[in-house]
Length: 133
Length: 118
Image 1 (cartoon, rainbow over the protein chains, first blue to last red):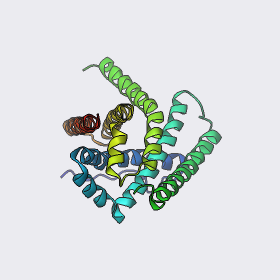
Image 2 (image 1 turned 180 degrees about the vertical axis):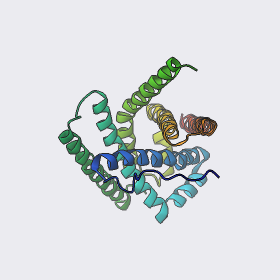
Image 3 (image 1 turned 60 degrees about the vertical axis):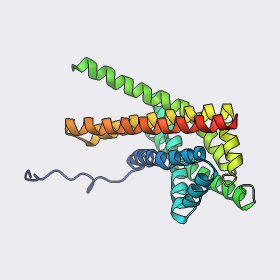
């Protein structure tokens, strides 16, 4: 094993800022969404298998861990979507001023939280209201 | 592989990433809105929803584009953090194989659901 040579401090000294935090969160939500493609694929496969398999997998996904993951992925989806739009705006050349970057950044966070909450309130409303029966 | 090849490959990756993202904006919104309203406990309703030709088509496109976008993203991540060329190539290869596998399972499943609903 090569001897570890000393490096200049990086994450230990770098002051967290909205820009860097949102950037790494965009990457992290991307990874999380990618991982979520596997249970999603399994779910679609289960629909194709028939009612018994579908019932079993829905049951499995309905436990506390499944619901927690689903909630997390909902946030990941909205965050990655809104920050993705922010990225696309940058790609077209808009919004590079520091003030604009901070404003759009906070907007992305607010929108992500709001849409996550709204979609879950709506979804649970459907489920508890008997619509999902 | 000269620098011109790398430049072309980098540009292609950038364009595909943005192109897939743009496609996914409307389709993703449609998907989430649909899933929130979907009575998922009712198997027949779920089967009918996905069995509808338009829905099946849109869902298939959304899934395939998503999977590809995810693979592109992962490649970018490996590029940043995996420094050994051989490990990087192996990571990319595995990712694209998995992406292809997921895509195949999704397509076959959607087809099967669609056919049984006809």
